Amino acid sequence: ERLNKIGAHITAAAPSTRTRPPITTHILDVSRGSPASGVEVVLQKWNRLEKEPSFDSAGSGDWIFQGSSVTDTDGRSGQLMPIVDHVSPGIYRISFNTR
Image (cartoon, rainbow, N blue to C red; front, side, top):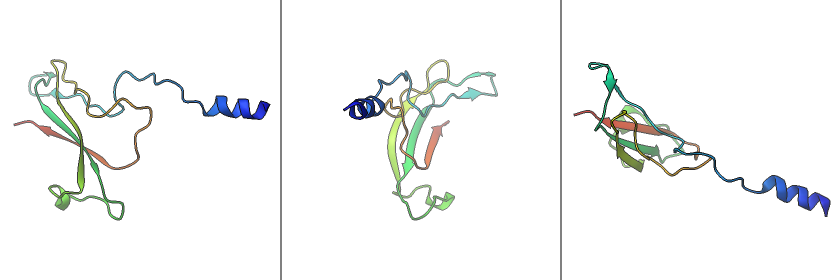
């Protein structure tokens, strides 16, 4: 019985202490020397296990949309994915619409 209690304690999910998602970005406009606000940001995840992405696959349907946002006045992205303690393993890419 004691082992069951210890096991339950070890496997119990602790509440998340994160306040931001695990994947974020911060953009600086080096031409101005200040944060880049108002930049659209898109997060995607590669969806194929048998091969890695290449530049030729940039427009393929193998990238799965995860989230998007626009940078704030401090150049920081908003929430691109849920606030979780562990990121699903994989290949992610962040795209920036710099116009």
